[in-house]
Image (cartoon, rainbow, N blue to C red; front, side):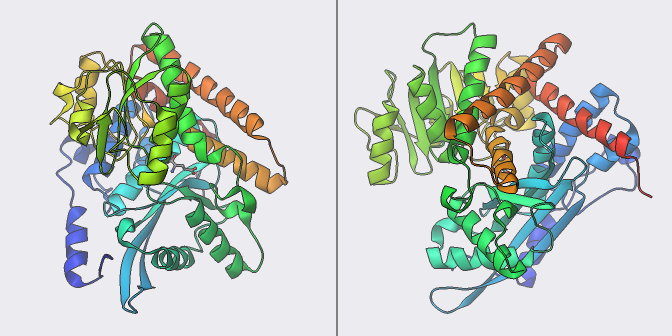
Length: 450
Ligand code: GLU
């Protein structure tokens, strides 16, 4: 029905997606290294690292070690479907680096998931955790599936069997999964339960983003959106001269986009358009996000909300606005549509929503971009708070969590904005430089075994 059947044809197709375009100059730089994860997205993540490594004069041996994941696991996941047939899905867990602590990162369920995507996102997690000063390495996982076609029972069996296949990789001191695209608190509860049953006792800290009733943290669910909203307000203040009621377009109305829109709306920002997978809505005078959230609860989508016109996801990105927040999928702003954008500031709620070509175009045209590893780092930051509370048996209030989140976001924004201004570099390069240099220092201090 909807799973990826593992047969020869699929495997051949999947492997061909990993075929690497010629490395050009880089071939002589790194003649021996090549891995199966080199999809287009992975090469993009790698070339960001190459750019920053060059700018900061990173030693070649450290640079090369950071260009590839430390470990990657591919698993086949057989699942009994509701009609009693058995489908096999393909799942991944990649740990890019574990120098600073256990690997950390989300698990996504999506048809775009492949080794290259997961490896690229694992690398981003390394920089994100290092930038935020969290004692973690970077990881990502995922299952190639169409989650919207799976029943709850099928999703549960898929999640549990995936967990059991990767069980030797994960653990509270080894690698701690969390929600990502199309996974949520319930998914984390199933992972935690499967892991706990297998080891024989309850281990809440094997995942973060759990329901509060089984050891989750207050404020975790809202944390990514809260962090995006926080970065947006800081960037408005520092780069746009603190526009008093800026017009905002938000692509995506899931856990990240809806919370971001709600918080900015409460702060007096004018949200003129939002969208979800089914399409978008626009009202140039501003949308009442509190009422829209009630509408979405009943109807399951933003379309049909009072006083708004419908708009496609593509057209939404091209609306004139002060601030654009892509908070849905990756690769939404590319060379095909970047010239049509009419915004001053982009805050990346999603991971990797802007292609490298579009990113350079935006920089040349003085559009400020707050990069994903800073803008959406609120999620992993409160994941860290959840992990700490779990390990130390502490219970922090929601205010305490939010205050701590604001402190860390504030510090990271200060550091990134300052380095960007002082060195006249893009915010993305500044954020990466801070993350990569923390990794480089740690690798130096730890030395190389044996
Ligand atoms: N999936 C989220 C991210 O991309 C959260 C990861 C986490 O909390 O570990 O940052």
